[in-house]
Length: 164
Image (tube, rainbow, N blue to C red; front, side, top):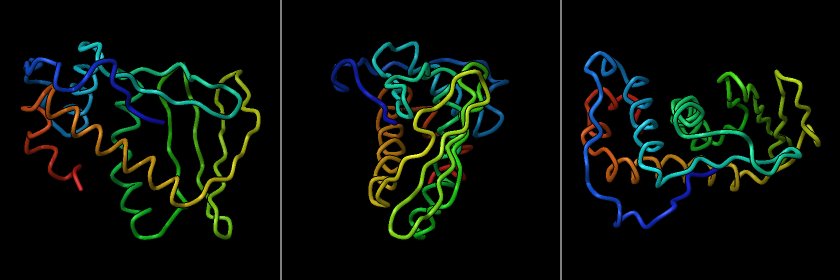
């Protein structure tokens, strides 16, 4: 799971994505607007794969927004050495849930599908450092890319509680 750039970050013009004020009433609304700006920019891609499908059918507009809102709570756990949590891709179409469970020195990640798609394998094992790295990188990249694509949104005070 990662955010990838289609072009160098410095080549993206510093333009502010304008959204209706009614969407700026909470952190989730702002995160959704940032993800919409990523999609419109055509410079950033949300990439997820695994469990028998190299490229999951995800995008920035809908799927990244549902995932990124969960990342700070996950990071609080991993930074405290807790590796039992879940990540829910709840948006219609993808509808998958990843269950992370500590298993000795590793983390067992189980994919549960709520559609006809069947994960194969349904579980994989990862090192704790690799799990931490995935979530640290997507969080940092999200903030870095947001500061270029839509600086005003990422600096909105409503995101203060979401930020670590």
